[in-house]
Amino acid sequence: MLYQIKDSSKLPIAYASRTLSATERDYAQIEKEALAIVWGCGKFHDYIVGLTVNIETDYRPLVPIFMHKALDGLSPRLQRMKLKMIRYSYEVQYIPGKDLVIADALSRSPIEGGKDEELSEEITAYIQMVIATLPATDRRLSEIWQAHQEDEVCIQLINFVQKSWPEKNALPTHLSRYWEYRHSINIQDGLLMMNARLIIPESMRTEILKAIHEDHFGVTKCRARAKESIWWPGLSTQIERMISSCDSCSKQQVYHKEPMIKSEFPERPWQRVSVDLLKLKGKWYVIVADYYSRFFEVALLGNQKAQTVINHMKSIISRHGIPETELIADLSSQQLSRQLENINYFLKNMVLVL
Image (cartoon, rainbow, N blue to C red; front, side, top):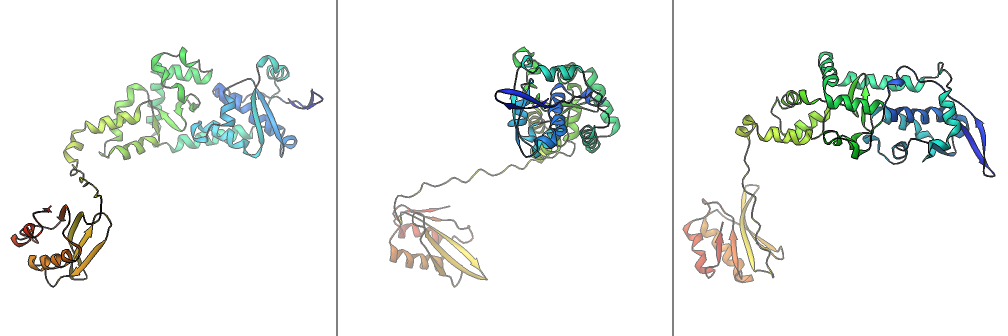
């Protein structure tokens, strides 16, 4: 019923009702309730477009779905319905069923929908597109459907979707993990899904995990592959555990060197100094840098002999003083000779060579 309030009285503007199509009768209860809102707004489009309207519902879970919940947290069907509502400005409010007398009466005496099934047809087409793009053969989808019918957990989930979810504290432990995903779990062409991903029954999970890891990709790629089409609680953790216990991956794993140990930051300038060699455009340079101030000096070398390096270092140190704590030289063994090591004496035995 569409009405406006004037002088605290509800003044009816229009009434409407229709039956559900054969496809819509298979919707989850929350999807049927959402469909009522979307269909009603479409029916009264000419009256409400451009205005802010209050939508009253006796189904409390619809309030966060239409008001706050992000699209990526909804099933594809609910996503499509919410997208249909973008054109309208609205607020959704929960009203107990006993106070929605007229709407309740109209729902018990529906009018055949006739040809006004555009939304249902679009949603059905979208569902068929989702199923068609799943990376699974018809035979595999048939096997998963059969497993859904035989798995105790899946049977109960299907029942919850088609009717309604109980409160979380009323769920057994093995089903409580699905509670936070209840608005995303849906049924499409008879297949139990979480958004657009197939929910895999317990009996098929080991086989599916092996298929995901058949190319021995790492954790990130295997998770991305799984995210394309399948889901069950704890899937990401099981993928990581499977890869960590894979013998083939362990043999081929590259073990990285230990991380570089950071040296303690100096308290004042010229307390710790480093020296290194640089080759640029065919010429060699010696670089001496202060750890504290980042001040550095560069000197062109005539050759790479240790004595040449030492002479330039003596020149720099004679102008700036001997480093208070240490001189760190990150040079290769070929560049370090006994002459360079003997610089310890010149620097009062305060040279650390790495």
